[in-house]
Each structure stands twice: as C-alpha cells, then as structure tokens.
Length: 462
Image (cartoon, rainbow, N blue to C red):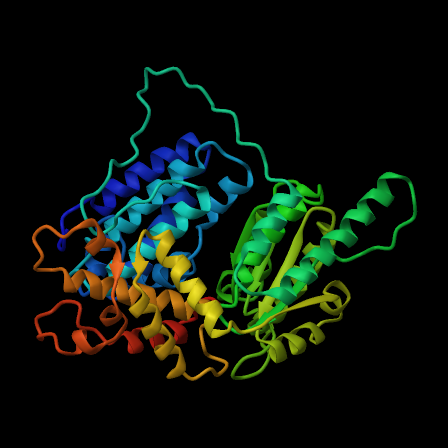
C-alpha cells in the first residue's frame, strides 16, 4: 500500500470478518459493505483504485467507483449490517463498529493521502462508533488494535443480547435530534395511532386498517434516513415488526439490466427487508426520468406493490425524495396511492440548527470547533445559496470533513502537537485560503467543490 502507515485494508477487512463471524453475519455482505465504505472514503485519492483492488480479487477501477457510489451513504451513517446488529441488540455491535472504524482508518492508506480522505474517514468512523455506543478511534494516525478472531481452542460463549430499546427510549432519541419539529410531531402522532390500533385488536375490537407505510419529502440532508432508522426501531418495539432492521436502497439496487430480471431483483431486496423497513431514496426515479417513465422502473414498482401486499403484516416501506416528484410518483400507480397515505415533510435546517449539527458531528469525531470557527461557519452559511440542491446536514458534514483535512495539513510540520491542537478546528480550517496557496506537490490540493458536484451527479443519497 502507498500512503501513510497504519492498518492495511486487507488487515482491517480480516478483523471485520472475524467480528462478523462471531455475530452470525454472512461473509459476503460484511465484505461488500466494508469495501464499499473504504472506496467511498478514498474516492478522491490519486491511486486509490489500484490499492483498493489488492483487497478485491479481480477487482477493477470500475468496481472501485461502483463500490464508492454504494458506500457514500455510510460516510455519515451506520452501515446496513451494523444497523441490523443494533436493531437486534447484538452483543457484537460495538466490536463491529470498531472494526468498521478500522476500515475507515485503512482507507487513509489507499493511494496518495489527501486531506479530504482523512476528513471523510474521521466523520465516517465516528458515525459507526456513535451509532453502536462504541469507543472513539483516531483515524489517519497510528491504528488501534484490530479486532482478532477468538482462539479456536477457546470455549465459544455467546454473550446475551443487549436489552432492546423501548418505544419511549426511541422517541426520546427522536426528540433529541436537531430541528425537525414538524417531523417529530407527526411521528409521535403516528405512534399513538398505531399503538391504540394494536391495543384494540388485542382486545377483540374492530379497528380500521391503518397503513404503516410512509412518504418522506424534503431536500437532501434533512435527516430522512436517520428518522427512518428510528421509525424501524419504534415499529419493532411496538410489536408491529419482527426484526426492525432498515434496508436502504435506490433505483440501481431495484432495477436490473434486462426485463424480467428486475422483478427478481426487487423481490430479493424486499425479502432482505422483511421484518423491518425498506427505505427507498429518490423513489420517483422509478417512474420518471430524463426520458419519462421506463418499463424497468414500472416493473420494479409493480413488483414492490405485490410484495407489500404479500408481506403487509411484517414489512414497512418508506419512500423518500423531493416533494413535487414524490407526488407524481405516488400518483403513477394506483397500488402506491392506496398504500402511502401519510406524508411527512422535512424542512430545511436553519443556520443555528446547522451550526448545532456541525458542532455535534465534530464532538462525535472527538474534535472541537473554537468560537472563531463557529463564527466563520455562520459566514460560510450566509454566503451559500439555499436552493433545492443545498445539502443541509450533508453540507455541514462536508464542511467538517474538509476542515479536518485542512487541520491535518496545518499540523503537518508540528512534531509533537498537544491534545488541544489535535482536537481544535480553527477558523482558518473552514476556509480554502490556506489550501489555495499550497504548492502543486501537495497531495491534498484538490477541488472540493468539484468533488462534491461529481458525487451529486453520480447519485449521492439525501
């Protein structure tokens, strides 16, 4: 591997697979999401595809970028396998999160090191660890101990799963989220209705059939996936779902290359979500596009409607996207219109809420924004246009990722930085002034705006 020293991707992957085996997770999905996460984090690093391919037998440059597209959703949120481990109360969830953090650290060794990769990895590692309540890991530096397999001679003892969270605890987590007042009220109302319906059914009373499927509308980065994850846990705690996992997909994961294959592919995705929540982001892409509706998307929708009916007692589907396109999506198929009757609107965050999100992300990654940096962020927000493409929470995350990278470059010549120096994000770290003045041999001198634009064009999640 080229780049900074530390745990290689192969080593990190081996450690993660050992934890996955202990947790009863199949090797294939664990390997796939770890490789996708590493690719998404190292995407901007020159030479990363070649180094990444060393951990993927027969892997190509195209495989690297395809994996990066799939893994971007996990730069700021727990991976699919970790989400399921958390939902099931697995005793291995913290160890798996730590193994994912090691993968994030290993991503910093792919290709030539850049400031952007260090920032991406720090935030992604924090997201995994925070979701599972695990320790923090300093990425891009000396690695911590990689999780190792248990000795074969050791007595296998399956630790008891942790107690599942109650409805009240999950609603408390929802209430602690920044902003989203309208969303919180609607989720509380929905929970009250479903709880009473369940009690009436148990008491032998007649009860109107209330659809549990939801439509989330709003601009990118407004917390739709986070709320969907909490909803899956709440429905599980209410006894409405048997597992409570969240499976997040988009059009590319439902539609195949040929007619007839799409139905099978969609059915397989729905099967993986059975017992939990299937979250379809940018769902309107199934029924509309640059050239209008297509037969592949219609096949996926028709299959989805059938699967929702067949699994109506143990599956919840949440579709998400921009407000107007989602209205057209629901109207495109009578089966959708009859099943999606509750729409929850996610409003843009205010400047103060975005500041809270930025400081919270920094704290989760064990960084601290000094007061001058917070003031600088307000200046950045004031100069940023707020159209439909504005990233909201994702914008704050991207700012932090870039700032972490600039901080690393600022400290490049400091032989023994203090703990405060390692933690503090300064106002200058939130601007491009220093990076603009770097020499051409600086590996971190890349166009961050261009990188973000490329991500959005390739379909980064809301």
